[in-house]
Amino acid sequence: MGKMSEDEIYMSRCLQLALCGRQNAKPNPMVGAVLTLPLSPSQGEGCRIIGEGYHVRCGEGHAEVMAFASVNADDEPLLHEATMYVSLEPCSHYGKTPPCADLIISKGVKRVVVGCIDEFAEVKGRGIEKLRQAGIDVTVGVLEQECRWLNRRFFTFHSQHRPYIILKWAQTANGFIDAEGHALEISTPFTQMLSHKMRAEEDAILVGRVTDEREHPQLNVRHWVGASPSRLIVDRQHPLNLESLYHHNVQSLIVEGGRKTLESFLVQGLWDEIRVETNTQLTVAGGTRAPQLPSNACVRKRDVYDGNIIISYTKVS
Image 1 (cartoon, rainbow, N blue to C red):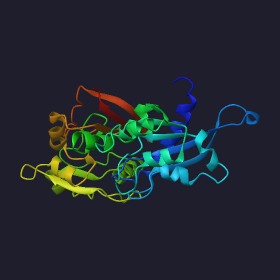
Image 2: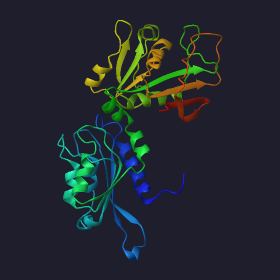
Image 3: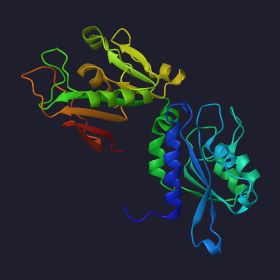
Image 4: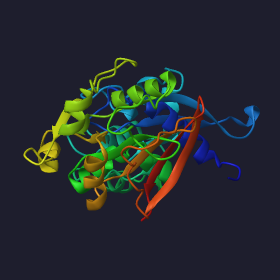
């Protein structure tokens, strides 16, 4: 990757800020905002940050509101020369809070840089159009892929009317998820903690009836801090209803079942991300084979912890 542009630098800061809302912004998207002013000739070239904010909690001020609130009194009269960077298109409708597009216009900022368009039907381009009609210079698509990835759960939920689905399993070095039907300690204490961290970041977790009856998994976040995901058990008599999850505002779902449960999602193409942990030191004589990765699975990230390899896959379009 080459040298970042000034717009990319400040958008990168927006993404850092947005992540601070990971736990409490749901079901709203994570958003970060930065306000900058050009340096005076005596200070040199470039800009300085005069305000920052992120969406802390659903129902409270959006990132843009928080950024404006952080501007000090000396800089307030200079907002007409300011640029606002925001990772997601400013809202243009009245929800639990007033439209951020209207606030930006009222503050008189000169330029707005947007990471990506909001897929939510109530927004979707309207905020950007409102800003442009007010005479504000708007740039869209700075670090767009990174901004879209940050809120992939939100976008999937609103565009496909279902949760973002993460299939997850752990396997031995020779590709088994159990030993002749008996559960295995494949994860290390550290990678187990990482699994619980992931649970705290998702809305629901699912296993099949056989796994539930055989292993009695707690499926909670006892090794991390945060809310435990909703616990779902499925079988032929109680199939998964994605439409029901959508209406209950479940934006993300972890599937941690056995092979049959995982394959039921794979054969339907009902997945957005697959995370596989492999214990490179552990082998068994036999057991249940791990599911086969689909041909459209592409490696996004590979990490090694305590000798265990964790690979995250996403779909190739």
